[in-house]
Length: 173
Image (cartoon, rainbow, N blue to C red; front, top):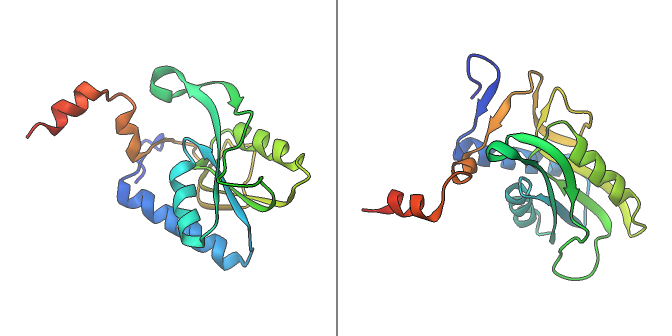
């Protein structure tokens, strides 16, 4: 999956789904029982959705944003949503926080600090697919450690630069 230069990691849909499944098994084999999953949008939505389905637990969503410029490759100010969206009730009990990766670790650390201030949360653990070597935050669960901190090219990023017109051209039979 890693290119020869060690600076880029290209991930296919099959590889991506396998990583999510491996993460689910890692959480399961740890024996930790949790009540809810909180995923960080956008990167944590797909892993969070799969884990929610596999474990049969409700999924909450919190929007975050720090990558904006140059098709999402330039990190800037971190924005955290004021509200957390969930189907009913409030976020509480034992919560599994899910994102796609611990890049610099800034987002995960900020969210963890915010959540630890919520009296309704009894226990909080975090889970990601990848942890980069430069990350200042170490999640409780992760599938791959990337010491060279490559840029990860995830399969859904093909849509970042695509607009409806481009999609129409692609789907013309």
